[in-house]
Length: 366
Image (cartoon, rainbow, N blue to C red):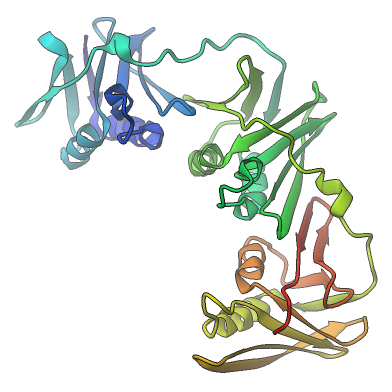
């Protein structure tokens, strides 16, 4: 196998797939990237057995077919330092390869390509298609609410549900819930799966630069899901289990609402959070007809207090929240003002938009 490819194209290929590399596995082959020449394209693949990423780069002048595997981290480090010139990679004996670019020459030891895990064969299935920008927006609106704790593994991912012509993503850590909806161009077969957090993060990263017209999503056998756009193919194992029936915890809409400048609210919460500690995280909201007071008192650090202009249509109350739970959602909204439904100090607060819902539980006041 021998291939010549521009350094920027080779580096991009490696950067697309390298996040799926597992260099801490007991299987040495998982620290490698598989290179294949097929149908006038260089195909690079990486997998950690839970998520696999494959990227196609057209190489019209590739003289031969073949395959080899090379260590991902070292290869990426080398290619990153090469000049913007043509890079030639050629397979040698004993699974080694040479890499040449201008005056630079490297010999890199690889592993047998036949040891690399087989990438699932993608057959024709019922597929969902959605613009990359739309899917990326749904991920941004929900991914921050995924749980990072391992006590409830089903929450370490995002629910992806297709019903008719609506694609819904939902994530929760048990203390907050984010739900976002997107419209599909055509109705398709219903689907409900939980996609692991790592896959969601990689999708978000790769979709940001996508210029494709659509992302294709398809359910595969063996509890796997495919995402395909442009030259990128992601195949991920899904999380087994039943995602919590979040619809049952959505409060009925209320007229008791707080309206405030989103930018002012972000600033006030961020400043008050400077007085939080690991054992005292709650920031206090005091709401009344024409004002909102954000405050935090800490026996260890001191106190912070800030009054904001706001409109509140309910009964005055004092309610406490984890500040991060507000900062993370407020920064992904786009409106100048934010409207928050608040009923009482022991009931969840809600942001309710046409295609987005956010629920956050209050904390106990000390």
